Image (cartoon, rainbow, N blue to C red; front, side, top):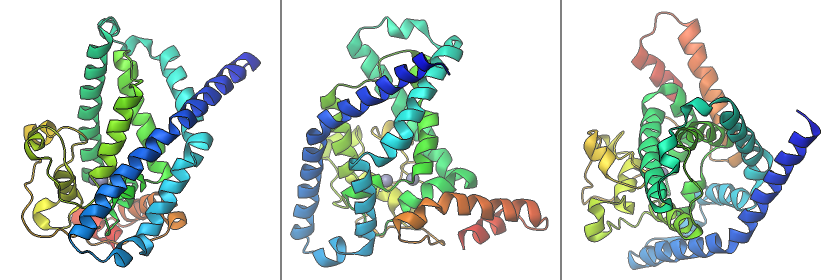
Length: 301
Ligand SMILES: [Zn+2]
Ligand SMILES: [Zn+2]
């Protein structure tokens, strides 16, 4: 890599960091709104706030969110890696681009990008649940038993790196604008926070189109009938189309992992995917007599 390359990428990384910082207060406001809503519902339902917000579980989510808001994973890993990856794809994988999409009006490009990404999110999320390898990366997000808006941040750095690799492809393939306007980004952020709020809110008539807290909480539920259901990110259509939709019952939901436990600590969760992969490999390659379900149960143990 030449000096010009390094200077170019450094410039891009700094520009991206500054853009993030400028947008900061918007996201803090959004978090405030999501939290106020969540808290309002907690008070409404007379939940024990001490149990909820002074729990170790909540503190771990707070660590994830704090590091995220301080952009620690972004500055050191995700932005440099992402810019390098995007540059590499642009230079070496130009054959994947569908030229026609970039000539569409901006609104159409944004809509197309949104639909494509949401479709991509659905399948990627489904793969994370059905492949025991990818599950090792995703299970940390599901380990939260006290679901709250900050649970959206409970994703390990390793999982984020993989997501970055997976989600870098659609923009390159379509060669369209994926830089959503700020208002749209804020709305997406608010949506992601709210759907983890454990409020059971179903968005009324909009429930037919958009994923609501009620909908995503089913995805986190440990009830057998909710297992591996409701994978969608923003739109409900994919789960209906591909047969993975489950309706919510009136019962109060319980959340967390089924048949396995992971440590409730930010640092130890960092190594969960690595430990999980080692356990998988050990069972797969060194014990020949076992069948698949037995393997999964052992890894889960
Ligand atoms: Zn999931
Ligand atoms: Zn979730």
